[in-house]
Image 1 (tube, rainbow, N blue to C red):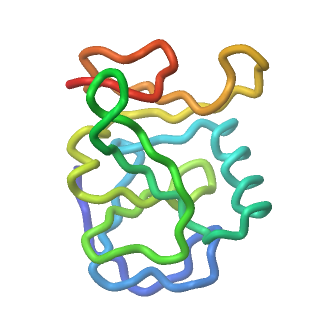
Image 2 (cartoon, rainbow, N blue to C red):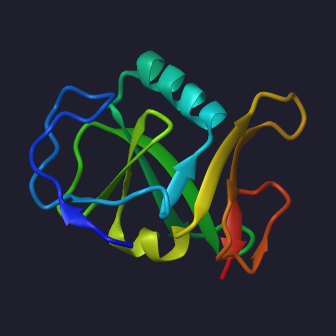
Image 3 (cartoon, rainbow, N blue to C red):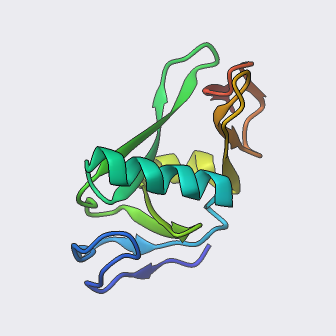
Length: 134
């Protein structure tokens, strides 16, 4: 994956400039489907917690690692910025090691709906799709 330094520019869904030290990645790292992009856009407008979606992986869950999604107003030095489905996402370098090639989808079905990660690096995942192991 080729990454370059991002110059201070306005991301597609946020008026604040991107900070120096943030690298720009592409959808080879993380790709949101159109449905996921639409849902995230709706949540950003409703929550007003910041215009970036931060995708992280933390220890925990029934398979050892868990996905975390949250909104943030500012990127951190070293973050990888990915523009996908009209959403500006941020991924820290450690998380990027586990996410490469991942797709994030969203379904509004009553049973089995919500955000779903399809991660080609996962050796096993739980039935809820919120944790995995490598």
